Length: 289
Image 1 (cartoon, rainbow, N blue to C red):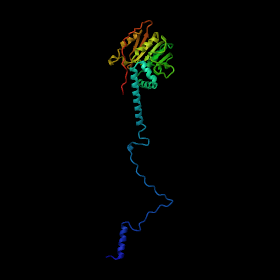
Image 2: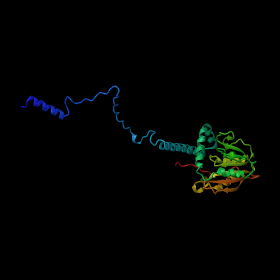
Image 3: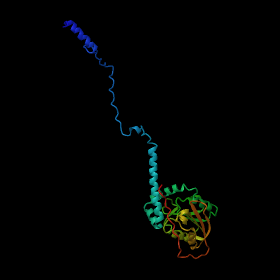
Image 4: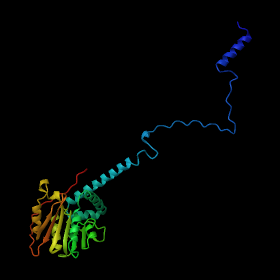
């Protein structure tokens, strides 16, 4: 048995080896002039999609905006296709009534129309404008289905701009089969891609009424509507029907791959045939892209 003194000394050495004991130095409390270090902040919770996030929404300025533009374009294109089909498959009076009640849709249609025409290598309205500029500026013109009234804005002639809706004081809003123009009052009548109604022969008959003898009838039409190989009408029968109203075909411009342009002239004296066999013009419908 160890003596008491030696046992106490051994116990003291054992406590020092273990790091314990009464002499362990306690940490000093911070003084009033020394601030305690802040506690560590808890780790942020990982949110879904955090790997793809940025302060601005990583990529939000490019991809979502591009996607939104595409969605808007699809919606706009869908509205245009719907309105375009309606114009081709209803009468002029029905179209006039429809857009009279919903005039804003006419803007939607023309926005889509302009977008489609932007892909054409040549615009038929520009060919017609150049033709008018090469002839007398004293001629009075009736532009049936004028759209944005491009003809009136680019020639010196007096132009009666006619369409289903008038957002310009110079445009006459009406059914093109029944215009307020006086008989034998114009030298030129124009249909630039505007023979759209199921009763399109009535439009041409109205043009015949307002044209003076020896007046010009210019018709630009989508090539596929007058191509029998693709289900379109026979262009010869189309011209024959118009000739029976008292017109003669002066020339036909078929060099453009998108449209055909006919130049008719009203005879000085002629008798209009009452029962004309008009060919049916198929609707020009755009496929969804």
